[in-house]
Length: 419
Picture 1: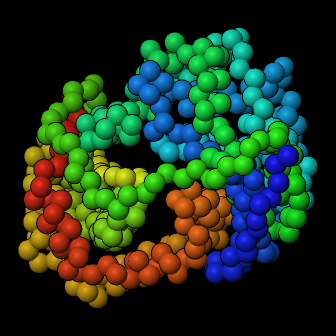
Picture 2: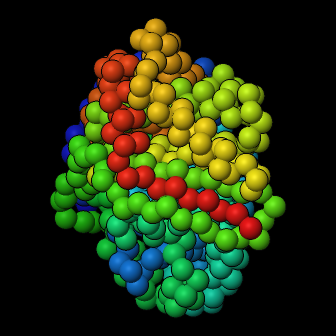
Picture 3: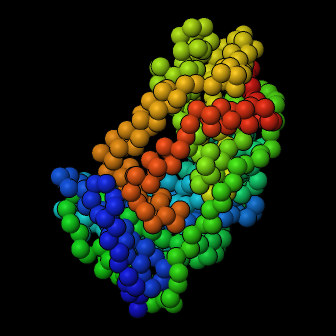
């Protein structure tokens, strides 16, 4: 039978130790006590996201996520837990699928076996799949009605290869074609114990985590944990400069630049740059584009970094008559940055804000849970925030100036979505 191979206590986590248990089948559990809290959250992560899909399977990981909530006869388990105060959620990401349980810490022992049973013992039948397809297709159609989402999907498709570039939801044609057998084949291939991480954060001690997790698996051969091989890579992406015509009152201007994988040294330079450009009402673009010139109402950004590549996207909502002027101002800001940079004092101030944001994030139990699990999925054994802060400390004005020059002087994507 499955058994615990080893348990480690990592004492370097700033707000309490982490108990990491490795099972003989390759599954890993993490437990962290968040003292003073009355709640608990348990997240089951499975490295079975959309990057593992073949072209014919695009969208299948998302469909399986939906279907795992379909019990054979009724949704009695979910309903029972919700009536007792549990909150259950799930999402599909590029690299993994996550199932979330939030509840009172006193309920965790009774809830956790039921929660895990939903996802580790599935039954895919034709009737449930046909019904759930209707829901998923409606979700895909609603996404197509969202201008900003459509623009981002277009950029991903153009910037990245098929594994990262295709939509997590897949195509309507693919979703309509999936059969229970298709789902079973993907599930058996990727929902294996060695691709699973169960991360639990609770206000109270919880000694039965390993016992409960073990009980969900049948006898299986020994296996090592599967982890995506991370690469220190600065992405050279495919770029376009184009327009998309949509029926809309406003216009959206997107920029997408070459980015960095999650472990590349420039990842933290991007992080500080993003805070400088978009970090609140005192940020460079908010002051320049909204306060000084009234060119935008909404603006935002996305630093997307994956195991082997990434991109940095900027989004500006404006009126069609302002598009050219807006583009000029955006590119003026970058040119000025290349010419003058920013002072080290300001860089240090931004770094302090970023680090403070991380620390404040730990006040949220779910964020603390996600932080621990994602480091495990990235094969990091040091859960301490000090390891992240050390990399942040290496950011300098000179490094940021060099980064902006590299991304702005190279090819980049410029997309205007307008009527």
